[in-house]
Length: 418
Image (cartoon, rainbow, N blue to C red; front, side, top):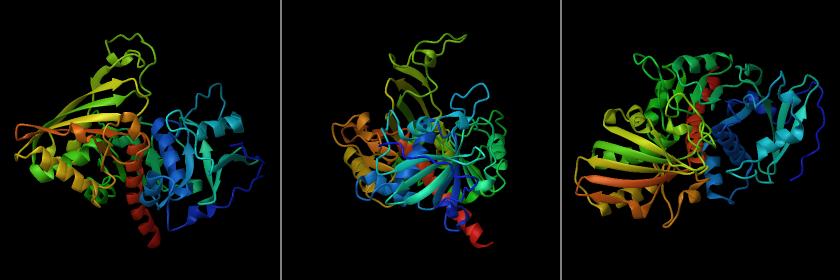
């Protein structure tokens, strides 16, 4: 797709579609950290939900249904490697479009979604999006590591995809940077160095939605957990509801992430994650299993796990081993999983991977967990083993945006009462 023609718009930023900013029927989002992996997926899923044709892809169609109340008004793309006082204003239009449209894992945005860069005389930079399905909309672009006040765009929900603000204090500070913001949602696990501090609410959409009502009373901030917790929590909840879970161990075989290195890097400590990610299976730790205790308090202290990073770009696997309180059989476990996969409550959470599939086959799937049917087994009457693939980027982001859509309901309700 060719880059569309670009022309200055003077000082007028009232583009077609920007009237949604004042709408009482949607909640306006500001995406912070839009240049990272989760940020890129968040941006892409939003565009697919608004602008992709119906009926082309089952996952795209589902995205339209899970985030109808969201309107993206601004993206902070991070520093983008800018140095020497340069800003996003110094990046060429074609370079910006290339970074927004192209992705090594997900490929290019569909050509049916048009994108172009527009600038006003003040140097503000905007992404203009247009399609036959969604019409036109305009998104403000900035690139900085500093906090940005997006109140002039009436941002109401702050989405933090940086992975850096994991404490209550940091998320509260982000919320305070924009006077119009009502909520801030973290796309990472909540972490507090001071263990006396109660973590912010941790919510996996569809698993513990009853906690969404508590966000307003707990600082209007929340964590959407991690990609691995989002995968394992629905299965563990289901097994606990049906059979009772006495204890469990989870091993995640996880795709490499941006925190790793392409070649060995010296460090004062012996850290396996400093080894080259292209060549090794790298054992490391994970808090995903323990984090299930934040989502399902009745299982707190009953679960633990470890992780192994492997040289793939995306698509991971969770091996869930559960000691069940009530004895069962493989057939009963499979029946419970299959019934859940077609139920209203679990249709976005649990699906089945086609027989003979690999992790590559789940990239771009929106479900939280795709059970590997040939791997489900029982050891004795009480130990269940379930393997599940998950797209640790796209699938997790769908859950993240589903949570944002739930929070948007409260934002819209508050506007209706003004």
